[in-house]
Image (cartoon, rainbow, N blue to C red; front, top):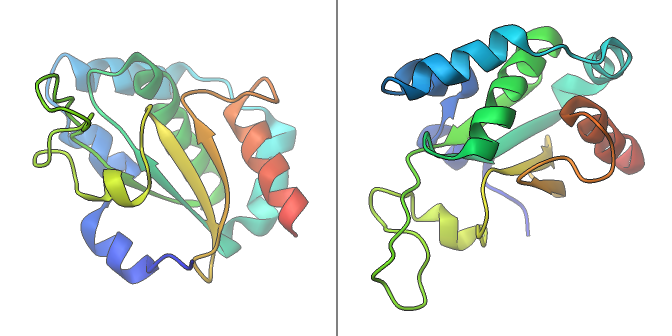
Length: 157
């Protein structure tokens, strides 16, 4: 299944806009993480070479600790490489709904389309809209988000 990238772009915001739109105290936490993260320069240099061929789609919530740790790093990666990062934000849990984890709205209906269970979900797609990989919550294989993104992209080139 190919993702409709123009539809996704119309329903999401760039990662920096997402962070800037957050309410306090969440915005301050996200901005502080963005400013203090130390990117792996080798991975960043490698990502720069192929950034124009990929798009990152993330699902996030301001209250989520893993989102606060990783979404600001995605913003720094995007800024350093030119990699397009789009965010579906505002996810809210629905503890009263049977069989449905997210309250829609305010959560975007795409949480169902993309089978979002845990967040952040970071989806890597190529420029045609083909999903080539996912990172759920935190990098699992490599120590940094940028290294794991590059590894996913490298295996699909």
